[in-house]
Length: 210
Image (cartoon, rainbow, N blue to C red; front, side):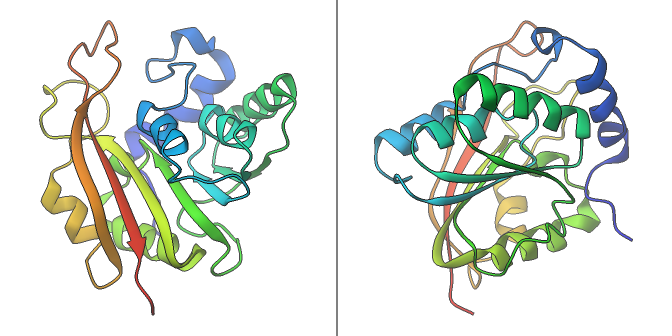
C-alpha cells in the first residue's frame, strides 16, 4: 500500500501535535492562509460551499472556512491534530466534520466538493503517491469545481522541512486534461524565525469534465 507522505515527516506529525504546544510547532501560524482569506474576500469561496480541507492539521483553515459560511469536512491522519481541531471549532462555535483518514483514499463520496483546499500538504506527498493524490482530489471534486493549492516553492532557500516544489512538478501532477489552471503565482508569506523568506505557490485549478 502506498503511503501518502515522505516517511521522515509523517512519522512525526502525531507526536508533535500530541506533545508540543501549538505555539512551538514550526509550521503553525494560528491564522488561515493569506491567499485563503483573499479567496473568501474575492468571492472565489462562497457561503454555502461544500469544502474538503485535505491534511487539515489542527483545523485553522477549516474553522475559518466554516466561520465564513462554508460546509467543511477536514481530513487528517493525525488523531492528536484532530483533537486540537475539534477544540478550536468548539471555541469558535462552528460545526466542522473532522475525520481521521488517508488523503489518498478519503472515503468521501464522488463529486462531493465545490472546493478542495490543500494548505501546504502537497509538498509532503511522496513521488509515488502524487498520482494517487491527484486522482483523489479529482474524484471528490464536482465537475468545474475548484482545487486550491498552497505549497513551498523552489524560490525558497534550502533548509529543513518539506521539499521545495517546481511549477513543472505541479503541472505534471495536476495535468491540464484533468485540472485547468486558472491561476498560479509565487507569493511571499508570513516569515518565521527559521524561515524568514517564505516563498510559496498558490494555485487555482478547475476540475475538467470526465
